Each structure stands twice: as C-alpha cells, then as structure tokens.
Image (cartoon, rainbow over all chains, first blue to last red; front, side, top):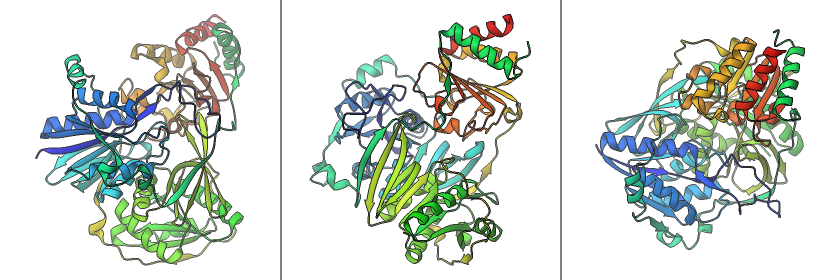
Length: 265
Length: 322
C-alpha cells in the first residue's frame, strides 16, 4: 500500500542566537538573522522518508515561506523527498498559526494524500498548534506528539508521548495527520550526489490565485490579531551571575559548594 | 465574560494543571465579571468531579461511554455541546500533550482563534490579551486578539499557582450531551509505561545535567566526573537522550523525570520550557552556559557564563586541590 505523504516544514530563526527587538517594538530585528529548519520537522521529514522506503509511495515537502526557504526544500529533496512545494507566503513574521494552517490546508487539499506529517512544535513560536489546526481544516483525524508509527490496513497505529514518559497507543483511519516528536528516529545526512541532484530539481510555487483566493489576507481567521509589544521577559528570579574569568568563576563556585556542604573534600 | 476550563485527568487522577486553570479563570472573572465553570469529561469520573468542585468552582460533569478515554474528536464534540449551553468567551486548557492536541483542533472546528502556550492572560473589554514567550524563551510577546467566537487558549503549566481547596465547594452539575463515538477520529488502545532498568534520578540529592552545550558525546565524561566528585547522578536534557548519548531514564523535563534535588547543576543546558518544568523546584540551581541570554539563567539561582568544557575541569581542580 504505497503512501502519499506530505511533510510540512518550517524555516525558523536559529533559536541559539541572541535576539533584539525591532525599532517599533513589535517584532524582532530580522536583518542579521540566520535561519534553519525547525528541529521537530527534521524528524517528521525523516519519518516520511522511512515510511516511503518501507511501504512505497511518495514524499512531498511543503512549506509556506519566503524565497529563502527553497534552500530548506532542496535539503529535504536531498534527504529523500520526491517533490517540493513552496507556498509563496512571504510574511517574515508569520505570527498567526491559524492563517498559516489554512494556507497549508488549501495547498495540501489540491491533491490526494494518505498522510500529513508535521513537527510537534516550532522552536520559534512554540504554539504546537499548526498540526491540529491543519487536521481540523482538512477534516482528517490526527494524533500529536508521536514517537512511533505503524502502517496498518487502511489506517495507522501511533504512539503518543504523554508527560512523565508514558506512551498512549491509538489507531486512526487514513488519511490522517500526525505531529512528530523529537527523537522518533535519527535523521540522516544528505549524500553529496543527492545534494547536487536536488539543486537542479524544480520547486513548485503556489500563490493565492493557485489556491483560489485573491490574497493571503483571505486566509485569515474571523478575528483580528495584533502584536502589542515584543520585549525581553521581565525576569522574575534572575540568577546571581558569578563574575570573572573561568578560573575565577571556578574558584567562587567551589567555595559556594563547600559553604553549602555539597563538597566535603 | 464566561470562562470554561477543561479539566484534564489521567488514570483516575485529576492532572494538577487543571487547578492552575481554575486559579487563572477565577482571577479573570473576578476582574471582568461572568462565570467560571470547569468541564469534566469522562466515564465514571464522579469522584473527580467532587474533587475539582472542592476548589470552590462549579463543575459541569459530562459522563459518556464515548469519553471513557481522551480523544480529540470526542472531547471536541462534548465541548461543542457545552458551548451551546454555557456560551463561553474563553475556553482554557493546560498546555499539556492533551491540551495542545485538542485546542487547535477545537479552534479549527469553531473557526475560533487559538492562542497556545500562554504564560499570562488578561481581558481588555472584549479583547483577549495574551503573553507568550518565544524564541527559546528569550523574548516575550503580548498579543491582542479580538473575536466574536470564543478564544481557545492553552496556559503553560506552572505559570500560575494552582487553586487551593475552597471554603465552600462548588456545585457539580450533571450535564448530559450526545456524542457519536464513530466521530472520535481515533481509537484509544492503552497506555504503555516506560521500562525502568536504571537508577532513579528523582531520588538523588545532587543532579548534574548535561545539555547540548557539551558538544560531543565524549565530553559526557566531564559531567560524570563532576557528578562523581559531588556524590551526585548524571541527568540530561532532551536532545541528549534523543541522540541516545544517555538513556531516556536520565532525561529531566516534562516528558522525562521531574527532579527536586538539593543541588542541580545544568551544564550547557539552554533551559527550554520542557526541561525547566522538570527541575525548577530544585533547592539550589547552578547553571553554566556560554550564552548569557540563555533562559536557564532565568530559573537558576547562580549563573556562570563560561564554556562548560573549560569550566568543569577548572572547578574539579579547585575542589580537589582545595
């Protein structure tokens, strides 16, 4: 039973960076950012490719984002995706998961699919909402925080991670959507010939008209969403920082550990 | 403005985050007027209804065979029925694996805005003002949402103090709804428990945890040396157990172990929400990280901005030479 899998990828600012607030106080400064593929999405892509390798079928990598996201889609093809689609929604902030999910749903709904995979969360905005919204718009069953998948006759069996390390076992009919948890697999590196090949593969581009609308605005939910402000968090209990060079810091911390009775050497 | 909080329970117990929703919901209705109710959905959960009501809040108790186990589809059907009778402006869920499984699905079905993983909420007229943390908790965003439909919101666990048992319990209102189990979308088969064949890090007085900042698996040796010198055990943040550098049993955080040792040392751990949830109540938290903006320093008591691979050897030298 070959599977037609769509995997949703998001390119995010590298969360290890330090961020500054933009002049109007409503966004981050974006000029100097570097971008990477969202962590959980890498696991979703790998899982999609493994399912294809095991059951046959096709993997389509899908994103909604500006031109720079083509790099991420090429990497996805080098790692085993058969095709790539970029929805040319180029709002760099893309703050509203409802609007993004509606756009993705319109793009996915254009062709038949058996399974949609997405990362459990994006590490920039950490809503964990896009997958569930997307499943709701596509009117397919979903399961989130998935750590293992088995394909069954007409359906899927999925293991959902709960708090404290427990796993919930569920089954769903296909087509379905799963959000994939970190650690479900070990993502592969792309081999060099595949990277070369992917650099020449076409990327399908979708604009609002391709999805039956005049503008991206028309995909908004029936509400208004505005950013009042972006700011460094108000520190509730900021750590007391140990000053000095590493050697001085080590001396201070050793003293502290002795004073508190944690080291009796 | 009426608020409907969705209780979470698992294996016959109320999940503590439910009481955080009660506390937050109560603050919001105190400021804006309206009524707070808790929806308890399940099968054979009468005892839990009384327990939640003891926090001084009304419980809408929905019993149905189709709700015997949580499914997003079953819960969405029940909440859609309750929406018709209680007219909530705000539906509150905890930002747990169940809460964020359900909230976006419900929002899509209701064409309602979803604001997930909030650390604070306020109501401003008919608008919702939500505070969220983004980009590894390095920044905070205040969003204003205005909608005719209910706001579907998940609240980050640990953001507010849970409601205590009230002087007078609230009423338990049996609320029958009709649910079509064939529309639940998925079938629940059971819960699998982790296999434990390792030390229990939650029993240790001293935990020294390694994070991505240690760079390479070989460098775990340093963290082990420090733990040994202090008579503690080695823990880890999620990326390390995902990479299988350490077994899952060593993972500290929401999806792993919750620890409250007397001393917690975070070595190269950035302090993602899911990790912090598992160690924030430790007695003394010492964090070592190269990034001064790492959120671990928000929760640590003592912070060291340094390369952990240089700091640990220096510390061991000080300890052993002193």
